[in-house]
Length: 270
Image 1 (cartoon, helix red, strand yellow):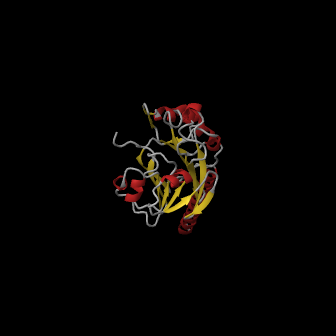
Image 2: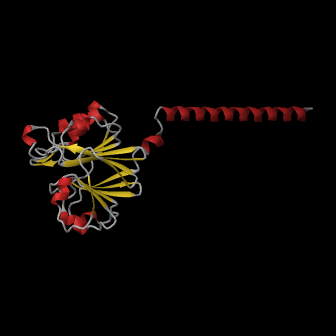
Image 3: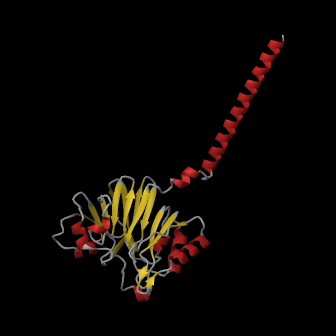
């Protein structure tokens, strides 16, 4: 009889433990689902932009690795500047100035399998004998290229004293979109309405240098208006040295602590 009682007690203990374990598993599952619905998932945050990697080269020049696609932005500095980088699938050129458009660098790079996206003004100034696959885009146009949607965004100056540098319609900023992720490359611009009205931008590259683009406070105000998830200040060396990107970060985070400001090394040799 004692043996039967002991066996019965053990069975109750096992059932009780199993029931408690199942309750704990159900509770954990509910908490996980609630966290996901609230956007609190650590994994969701950490992978938000991990498919898009920005590799600064110098000033306005960068390599963007987006999944399996490699994009060169405003390539300058010769082929040596891109040593160790994958060859580009796409090249984006924003404007005609030498810190964005460099025919000799384009000659040096292996661009046999590369589409080069440019505004008309850039194409007009490149040498006729530069044998490459160009796609001309004007402000407001959108194309589909290698699984990307690419929109040409205006870039221009607003301040009267700066309008000589970048007139509206000549250069392009770009918004690239793929798999629901959106990257904005501002080019040489001020905080224009076309920037402020952007929506759902995951990563933005925004300039701030005087007298050519805009001051730090205007850049911060523009960024706060369209609120990207992540922003890189770039193109921040001007006539009187470099802009105060630390101040830019302070201004942005004072206005919106959810915007991540990435201070990358754009001037490695200075």
